[in-house]
Amino acid sequence: MIRPLAEVSGKGAFITGGASGIGLGIADACARAGMRVVIADLRADHIETALASLEDRGEVHALELDVCDRDAFAAAVTRSRELVGNVHLLVGNAGMGIGGPITMTRFDDWDWGISVLIGGVVNGILSFLPHMLEHGEGGQIVSTASMAGLLPVSRTAIYSTAKAAVIGLSETIREELEGVLADRDALPNFQDISKDQIEITDDDKWKTYFLYGYGFAAKLGVEECPKTAALMRQIPGMTTAMFSILSPRKHILDHRGPYKGVLRYHLGLIVPREAERCRIRVGEDIRHWETGKSLIFDDTFNHEVWNDTGETRVVLFVDVLRPLPSPWSQINRLIVKAIGYSPFVLDAKRNQEAWEKRFLERRASPRGVEEPQRGSPSPTVS
Image (cartoon, rainbow, N blue to C red):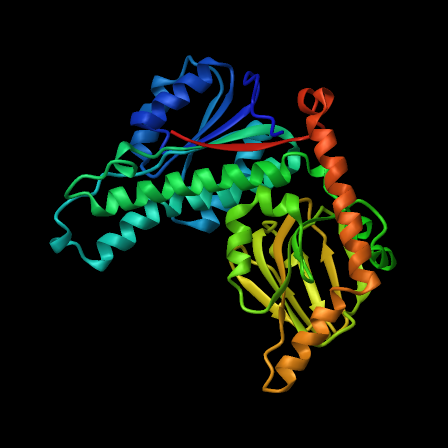
């Protein structure tokens, strides 16, 4: 299972909105516990006052940061690592009070409120999560919500909406990332499931986590990621869905798919900061992934993948039936259904089921629980 922080002394902490209020209190507690702290805040005067109040608490640094600025957040990750080394605790606390009757709110009010209260939390998670997963030393992601997210009251439409979103985000991340990435070393290599992939990858740097594959459901994946699986079932013509996890310095050799009846879709989930160095070539066209952005291509064209960064890349990998006019669409559907009964797919199904059995046995063993190989950040909400 996931390994949250059991010992915090000497660990790195990054706290947004850390120069006043709740954030300053968290920074004080972290510093008193021996953590190496970076506080981030928008206001320089608040930072100056906070540093003075924390002067005798231990190692505390500060950065000016607008949590709505994604480029600035990426730079903050780099600077924090220079200041305190690996960051193990991320606290998304930055926010503001915003209220008033719904009849008086404008689009600008909503844009501002949502961009700070939920956008700032998302920007922090997507900026720091690749680093926290990569160092593998365990960690925690804490997002400050509010009772308003659970029990909204009048005149707080923007604030309550954003805080409810923070709660939903944290709970979803906890449920699904815990199950998939807590013990990444135990995840199957692609060639362990699909034996023919050995021609393009022969190491342990391309991991997969299947949800669906040509007519069969990966029982463990569907159970561990129910929300994602439910979304996949709503995609018309979905044939395959999985998480594709590419380790640093991984090169997938040039290859092509065997059948033009499906199209491939990638959704960037965790993308290295040096995005241009993590790229895919399809034919003569080279693209890179972006967090939250989509790529769709015909995999029967020769394609090749490089992750030349020191960070992990994770995409949601989905194959869908190619849109065709009648009667070709019906013929294509029958062909794809027949592929699901081919030795190639049935062998992959058996390999997936065998891996699931081994994984569950590993999880159930006392040694596997008490001495995990790797740790990954555990999201919580406060």
